[in-house]
Image (cartoon, rainbow, N blue to C red; front, side, top):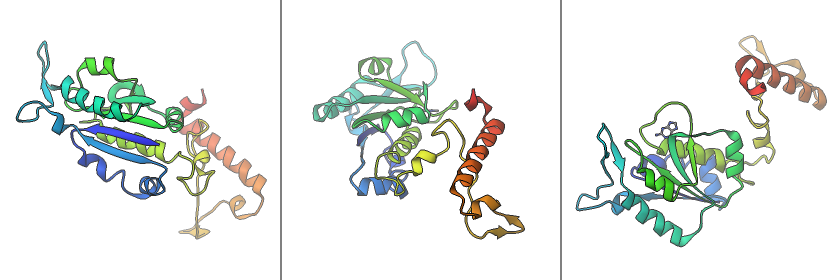
Length: 224
Ligand code: 6GU
């Protein structure tokens, strides 16, 4: 999968995408992420990428021309399955969308700042608008990092244990059951007996029951 990201603060995206599983995905050639700095496409001698909004009001708006120039350049290289704008008024991002995006080949993410981007860029180019939750971030970069991470780890071959992404919390609308590792007893707390026996069927049933109980108490909305 190839992911391009447009940002005015590319430094914000460097670290989250260059460690751990995201780095491994890229090292293995399964994921290629390219961050594109919008600033050189800015207008005038100050490379301006934003301006006051028509109609007045606090906050700047990202201008059409720099974004269009960069997007057109990227579109000349490849077609995108989705051009995604990260915005708090977008569709609430969840695992179902992550699963669907992980099946695509080419994604373009646009990170907004200030009051957002000129509405006409959304009309002209954007095919999907995503929000990562009901709160406001100062820019789309952290949201893009969250979404790229959640997609990248689903790509076949990225996670060593091929079945591991299938047992994640949310993967079947259930929270994951509790997990334990050694030692079997720690500060008087014991690992549940069933997990220490070798009965695979019993372990499976215990985990299912735990997942359901945990979901019912913590996230009853998921069971509806
Ligand atoms: Cl995608 N962007 C911004 N700026 N704030 C957000 C968000 C995105 N999702 C939740 N809050």
